[in-house]
Image 1 (tube, rainbow, N blue to C red):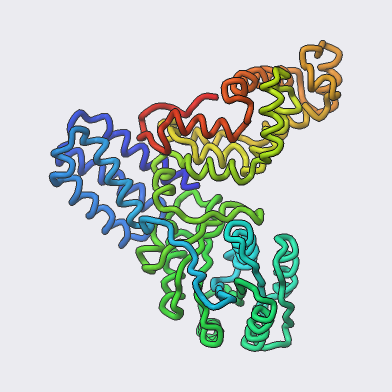
Image 2 (image 1 turned 90 degrees about the horizontal axis):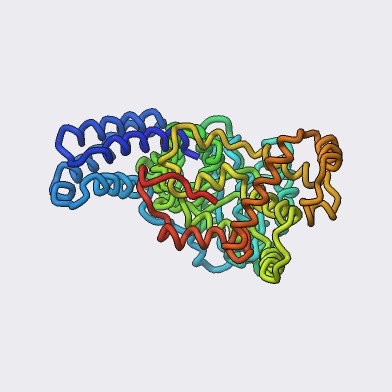
Length: 461
């Protein structure tokens, strides 16, 4: 996420961090680089101008000149202003209403609105312990209602049936009555999208807003549309009293223009960010964490939370107990760790949140290929259980059988065995808990999600 913006900003800040002292001249050079980075990330020009001016005023003033570490102070100013542009702190959903709390979802067609309804339902159910009902008022798009019904079943929330022959207002009023009857905590309404903003669509969603009086009106927008995302959000905000924004497809957004423009142009907070296609790929939007990721400082807090929520704790405890008893960390355990990394979005997703990656050469993180982990899993699956438990018995003939069965070669197998040995050493140090203990250990060593670009490379496991 935000790869190109991270590369440009990290490069600009590395230049400034190489200076012994800061002068008006080299601050101007750094500001020019930062400005160029933001414009290339498709951040709205008005946002860039205000951002650079605020940084300039702070950087050329006493705040930097009186600092014992002016270069780090300059970087902190950039980080603070990035946070300010995106909203300073996470603004959660306001569900303080007579149940059911109604959430109205708005957005253009193709932004991922229906999928986001399902993701938000799952998040509310799992993290807020809310009972949720969903309903589709989209009577125009073919199969929209059936799609939401399928997604609701996948995330195990209540679905209120509707029909394309009904009026949208009649659908939502019937759903609201049903949600009250069933004592639902939250009702999420999926509305019709269009390929472009038009008066008819705006009039319809305004009528829905009037009859529902929702506690939250969320605009769902595709992050990959960059500056257009902010402009579309503004158009909706002018027509509707939006309470927040959800950015979708942020995992495919290398630029980051939407994340840095939406809040300032609309005045509305980004409340959630979609980071993938799976139903659990929705995260609360924390401006401070996103700012550190943009600056290449990582986001260890989110990484630890991700590990805690997606790692199977029972399996981790069994593995820890096994290693403490001196039974070692075998290839079956190694395969389980690979699966856990894949559940977390793969190695690229993990590296995106790792501190210190701002010091890597530009484009280095793009070289991570999760197909390597799939290849490792295929190799282990081609082994017998005896070989997985005791890889020392692997002789030439066994290795040939395994590589033929997995479609790999001897070099791949030897590389896997070497990496397994390295992982064994890590597990002993981390008391056998796997990824969860590894992240906690990292957090202790790094003192939290810190480190400035240029402070050293990524941690080595």
